[in-house]
Each structure stands twice: as structure tokens, then as C-alpha cells.
Image (cartoon, rainbow, N blue to C red; front, side):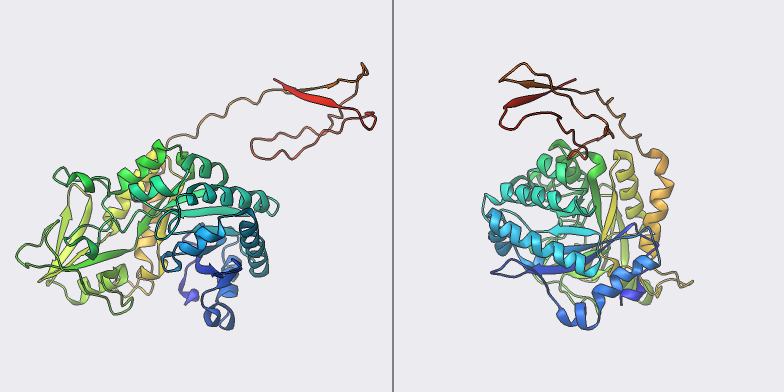
Length: 416
């Protein structure tokens, strides 16, 4: 239930997901029964009454929505406008503070190469409209090197996104045919060369090297693990051969996936049956029992990742997803709810002094406006009474030019 969420543990909560219509590209609910009849959208936004500083965003897309129709939506200015107009209405109607784009992924999964540029255009056009309402605009972005390079014009996106959420998880799973951690912090020396980019460090560095400002990057942390079935129970280490099927948990019921709440429950109710191993190079834990194997994050590894984000001066961290934390406190002897989210908050506070200072802003130059009429020698005055500073983006001040007759051509030169 939405009411299980503690809105004081996050600065921003994101409602996932809504989708788009296949033909009109209008934003639409993916679960009208839940969103509207059960008033989930309204209940979610109402959490702001419990934390007035909270921002609530609406996420559009997600893995199951695919890429094809988003590729078609972004292909032309007209179809982008249809989506943008419907997004504005949906956000206004339900009281959200902005939009999180989760197109998985441009130029991939049935998309087209031109998606990369079209996604930049979509973000730029959304920003142009959202600035009128003071809304936030963020995007959930891939962590894999090949996807990043084909899907995103990172430096261009960074100009118009408030935050870029790196989905730094799902690096390995049952699809690999061998065990591997869901979200290693660092690579191992003995990893195959093609897998040395499959870790948090490599993903973040690629974004930074591609022009993303650190303060706009938000590091994604997974509150879940990826499961495997070993082909040989006597070989339970990293990179051990595994089957193409795995095992599921009692609540999430997805093969190859266990929420942290399911992991901690197994560790509590099946104590002594699971062996927990700390992978030193990756800086993450995994556990195994018989032929079952799980690579996941715990409070220690999340602390290390939060510290890493702080050292680099990143904009923050985000989690996927809040419902797989131990939100009932079932695994805690003291009944502590959301232990992983609390651990992340504590880590961010603990490592706050490691955060680099913000960059010193460049001094704002004085700007003179010279108006030259190329038809006569008359001098025209500039009304410069509205001179509030503008740091970046679209100027919010204007300078009416007085006494210019209709039909005269003139040029404006900015001199600083």
C-alpha cells in the first residue's frame, strides 16, 4: 500500500509507471483500476501533506513498455508535441511536480538509430514547456556501455535534465549462463575483458567522461538481488556455471529475482542454511544454499556506494524500488521499517564531509546593449530598468527599445 511509505526518508518519490497510447502517443494509465478507482495517484500525491518539502514525480515508460512506440512518438515534432501536451495535462490533473522519463531504451529493443537525437529533442522540448510551470524533468538512464553509447547524447541531455538517474543494477542475471553480481561496485582483475565495464564504477565514469556534470548524476541502488541455479552445487563462487532458469520469491514471484525483503526473510527464517560471502573486489555480498545463489546489496555495500557517490560529488542516490525494502520491519528484532533506506540516509549523512565543494561560479559579466540602425543615424534608448540576474537558461528579463519607428531594420550586439 502507498500508506506503507514513509515520505520523510526521501526528497523525491517517483510513481512508476504510466505509459503512452500506441497511436495517439497520449499519456495513459497502465492500471486504471489501481490508479483511478483505488485513487493511487491521488494517495501518492497526498503524501506531500506529510512532508511539505517532498517532490513527487510521475514516471512514464519502464521495461515492459518497451522501446518501439517511444521511438515512434519521438520521431517527429508533431508526435512529440502530442505526448508533451498530454503529459502536461496529466501532471496538472493529478498534482505532480514533474516527469521522469524511463524510455528503455532509445535506439535499442526495436528502436531506431535516430532515437538518440530524437530523445535529445524530446527532452529539450519538454524542458521548454516545463519551465513555465516550474516542474522537474528527470530521466532513468541505462548503465550498460553499449546502450549508453547508442542511446544517449549525454552532454546534450545534461543541459535540460534536472537529474540523470543511472540504473546501476542488472549487470548480471540468469541470462548470462553463469553467476554474477547484480550490481558490483568495482570490477575484478580476473573478469573477462568484455565484463569489466559491468559495474557501478565503469558506468559512472562513462557518464562523467561523456560530459555529464557530477551534480546532475544520481546513482541508482537496487534493493534486490538476482538469483541463479548452479549447475554444480560444489562450485558456488562468482562466474560459476548456472542454468537459464533460476528461482523466485514468495512476494515478487519473478524468476531470477528476490527483493531485499525476501532475502532478509530467508536469512532470518532459514538461519544457518545460507552461506554469506563478501566479494572483496566487487565490494558486495552474495549468498548460496545448495544449488541456489543470490547476488544482492546489504547495508554495508549500500554504505560503500553512497560514500562513492558523495566522494564524486554526485547529485544523490535513488533506489529501485521502495517496495522491496523490509517495509514492515519483519526482519528486525526491533521492528525497524525500511532498514536499507534508513542505512542509505545514514550513510549519506555520515559521508557528507567527503563531498567536494561546489564549483566556484564564474563571475557574471556586465553586458551592454548597442542598437545600431542601418538606415539612419538616429540613436535609440534601451529601457534597462529590469536587470535581475539570469544564471542560465532562458532569460527572464526583456529590454524594450524605445522610439524606433516601424519598418526600420536594426541589429543588437551583446558586448561584455
